Amino acid sequence: MQDSLQFKLDQLFQLRTRGIKPGLDRINQLLDFLEHPEKHYPIIHVAGTNGKGSTCRVVQALLSAAGYRVGLYTSPHLLRFSERIRIDDQQITDDELLQLFTKFDQYMDQSKATFFEITTAMALDYFFHKKVDIAVLEVGLGGRFDATNAVTPEIAVITSIGRDHEEFLGYSIQSIASEKAGILKENIPLVLARQTEPEARKTIKKIAQIKKVKIISADDTCNIQINQVSLAGYSLNLQIQNQFFKNINFPLLGDHQLENFATALSIITFFPKIKLNMEFINSGLKSLKNPARFELIDENPAVIYDVAHNLSGIKVTIDCAKKIFSTADVFIAMKASKNLDNLGLLLKELQGKVYISEIEGEDSKDSMEIYNQILRDIEKTRLVRNPDLDTLLQQAIKKRERPLIILGSHYMAKNIYKYKK
Image (cartoon, rainbow, N blue to C red):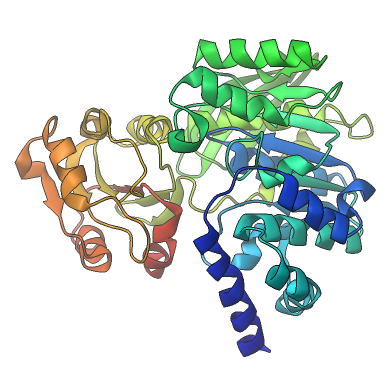
């Protein structure tokens, strides 16, 4: 069976050569072929530049703790394709995946659908046949022309917006925000996370007004007070609407994760059957896992892996590290399309070494280009470059004298998890 599944996965991954093709015609034809499984259960649809995957996972954990059967669709995966499609945080099994591939064989051969379109349709069909109570869908790229936008959700969500994928979404915050707000549907409520870019919020509000969309601001709905922070996470006090809760244990690190938490809690307020209390919230968060988001890989001193891969995401990861460590080294490799402007200014704040490498088997940014950019702001003696990822990782981890923050890409996971303790 394993050989058969791998053969099918290889076929699916070959569809990546079709690239990214914005538009909804192909996914709609595919959903027609499947007789629209997505219409049989409510959907929470989550777009944004940063934080959408984390928000999805917190929502799933809380809804599952409340007794709902929750489908979760996220991307990309770190190690296994099955990470993308889950029910109550249990990955789709190999048997189930093989059955889905058998069903999709004909369409994969005959259609011009992309990798992500096929994958999205597989998830939607799987959730229908597994009789989920609700599904949480993370947008892949943008919003307006993303394959997930073929659905009509019960709730739309937009997390923090910054600059990323500019070659597809535009080079201004207004343009990017407009593409993200493309998930808005007439009269479907929107939960909006705190926006650091005023133009993003302004653009979204304008589009929401045109589409008669009620906006629920996470900032107004949920207030979070930090009691204590450590590598184990946060101890928090919460105010959710008119309710107050003390001693909430939140296991994800980074103030940006608190914003994602506030957004997730704002979504939960749409479920009147869920009675919010300290025991319920702590119970839901206890099982919460969020791999490669400020994840502790090793200790003494700490090794942290975070998939932050754009400048706004890298900034919040660095800010988080500064609150926990007095100084730290950084290891970075990035995809070719990523913007490097002011990267050195961000990384120098941790005051340690900066290791620069390249992603294996991917369209990687040349390590010399990253090196030259960072050299403008960080002295040469602090920089270590080697395009061989495994060799440099081993050097950075084995010889570390201070905490090490690894960031820049999902696509380093298989190399990094070899060191997880």
